[in-house]
Image (spheres, one colour):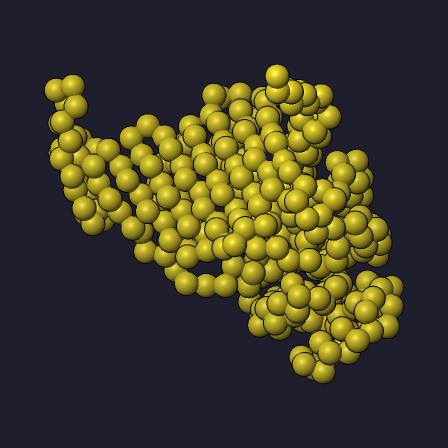
Length: 339
């Protein structure tokens, strides 16, 4: 049975917003009714390139659409999402959901009262290299993450923790599923007026630990997660979309998927180290993410990352920023003078 198409609009058609246009045009359940941007030249360019309607005002977009994707600077997320929810639209917001927890809580309450959904663009959840983790009993006790990028003016309206590290914070919370007990962090301002490189140690109530590093002043891009647990190590390259799994199994366990089996004798116990490289489907994560949003708006699916999950990631990210601020404010020792 065919379902009615969801009328969708895109608010903000800059670098990332233009990708939203491309993908929404390819989603069968969506009807892209138009786009809006405060920059007339950018709006006109996207209109010409994709032959889509360009709304003259935000109100026009919100009254025409049933669902909107918000691809605007973080500082504008709250105001635009508030107007969209009050206009009766379901809302997709690129991460982070808002700059503050208070704003996120207000949006979540408003969405509940209006009976509308909020979905947030923590896209790594849909990275093909992460999707294959469902094949394994993943219960990490230690996670190491590195997310490094060359400097770009995009995203510098927020500190590197909200720009980059929050992706890995969301993944860590999704994988560990335990409240964060303690946060330690350090960061350095190199180019902008907020930390451009940061490292954080998250300690969870179940005893698990995650060490995360994010930098926007690296020479090369890196997006890696390493997961460690009893008898298993998983390496995930999010850029290359490659997952490698090392497991320690008993000799009598069949491992038909293993590409390599290495015998190991330790303390009189004989076991096998297996190496597996699970098959990873090739697809566009943004397409899958926006398709999930449209289908969720139609009542056909549940959001992969709802507003409450995004709020949890924001909470930890702000705790990381607060920890960095505390280290910045600590009195520094004097350099000892020579004799």
